[in-house]
Image (cartoon, rainbow, N blue to C red; front, side):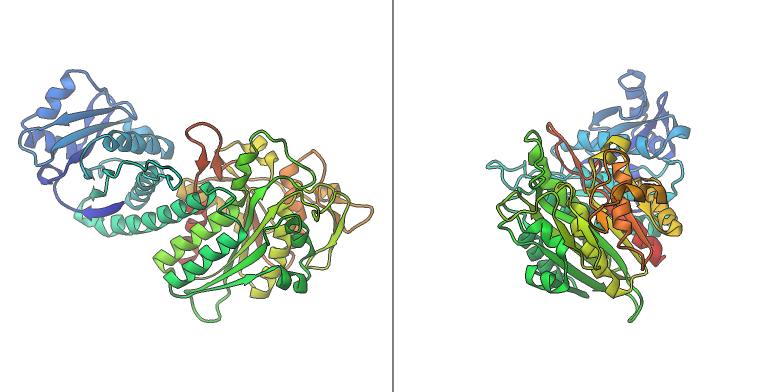
Length: 495
């Protein structure tokens, strides 16, 4: 999808479809009024028929209006103009896109510069619009014998006032990169587990290093991990014929010697639960258990496309959790890379085991901050559903930065407590720590486990178990979250 920014008049623009906002009670903004005037009142005449009232998400398509170069005009209801927020804006953009998708035109022009969104300036409004439109065009048909209709929408023109053009162009450029990262994340998540295994993800990382400058990739295979003492990681991968690995990606776009930021992603490419086997129903969705690693890769792709002046380290802890003859048993005790011992009471609590060794490995980069991203706990879905990611950490400034980034990117997180009292649930009579803390506060005790390996840096943990993918039906699939949040966080560090 190509996005082009122009400061042309809507009434004189040649396009297949001109999209105009319509407020509640058929209220026309200044741009729509100018189009109405140029067409000899054609819009007003159509509105008098009562086919649309301007409620948010309503659409009305008009053909061949006189005095215009646009072949069609699409009126999109925006509701009460003083009540527009991110949620309404998403509904409006999706409604417009759905209407355009069914048309034969290869392009469309959005003249939405009159629209005001609560808490968003021209840059923020445009960026969210472009992300929604680009993400709404996503199709995954790699394994379909019949591919999607090639007559897809190819170009969207964003009209703006000349004074707004620099902000709108910046928003469009950044949104396009974020949407590209989201699409990459969704592709990885939607791939079947017989294709997307740890070695495949490593290959994708290597290909990325060839495509973009400033990126170095190193793959720590099981032999290297054994030499490093990564006993927790290896306890997960040892039950599978697919070898595990930690993929280390270093992007040096900032000043030489400047401390990097670090993103650590959980990459369990399929999670059976191991010996603590999961129920069979819905287990196919456990291919999405690498959503953390996929979102880190997608965020890195956005950073590389923008060539942000920042130093960034990405660690992808990739393994397959299988109940093979060599699999870890409940009750086994392993030694982590940090030297701490872990009693594995449940092999389905494997994400924290691969992450803890990856977090320890992150120490060598002396990072300014570390954020791990993981589809870690079903308890997070119980607590927050599928709308909001869980957030915990050992540094309040970092947590607040991520919360604000989520608000700005319309990809929100919510902070959960990390009080010391919860740590007691991880006590083990036989090892330094148990890998589960019982049925209560599962998201918090999982973060408590990870916190034992983050003493040397500012750290935050994003639990995306509810937000990384959608379950069941036609909407089933990876979402690309939290790429917008993570990219916004890094943009904020640059700015």
